[in-house]
Image: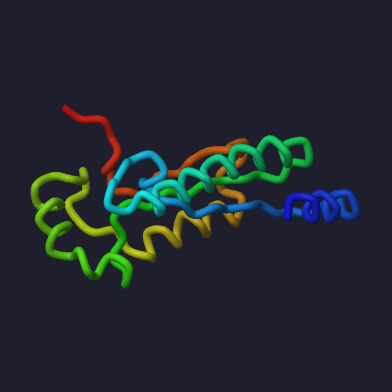
Length: 133
């Protein structure tokens, strides 16, 4: 994909594009009962960095969006567990995230609303990964 985008930019200097990778807080928050998932998300994180470096000279930004606990079919089986953890303070915002929360961030990135931010990770986790005492 990166070579394709470079070709588009060379053919049309006005080409505006970006890459938005969706990973998860599991890229850095270890969960031993789903190690494969964590490893795959960490791989997406590195791909974001590599592609940001590769595409930077062509002004094609690359971003990583890291959702936290999002209310989807994937999390339906652990609803009670996370309801309890959320009520006990897992996140700063005491609620489940929604697909709309993630979608609004992705839309802002696609519209170019984070200029000069290539390679950045945007957390959409309700403050779950904020260091706190």
